[in-house]
Image 1 (cartoon, rainbow, N blue to C red):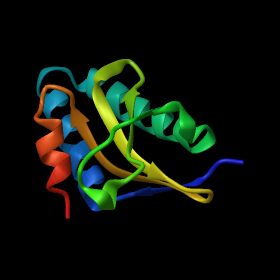
Image 2 (image 1 turned 180 degrees about the vertical axis):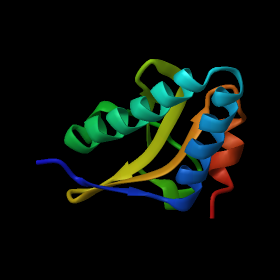
Image 3 (image 1 turned 90 degrees about the vertical axis):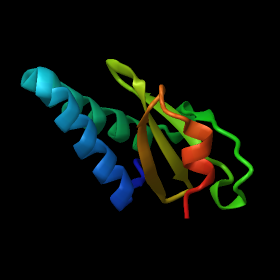
Length: 106
């Protein structure tokens, strides 16, 4: 059974920013990115254990996992899961300073 999906506001903002950035060069690719995000998150809802653990010092993020967006492997979905839901915290490009961004999440 698929878990419920909760996109935190910052994750929604991340997706919008990536979409806008990609659309500057190629709107069709940006649409493909958006569709790939939806498919990747739906896949995680069905099989949340697919993502690799992403350990951090921030104890509030214990159990954090990451999963690449299908076809956009440098874009990573960071999420927490339990028996009922997938909570998508961020969607970040791998070139960013990921530990710093994630460690400082409220």
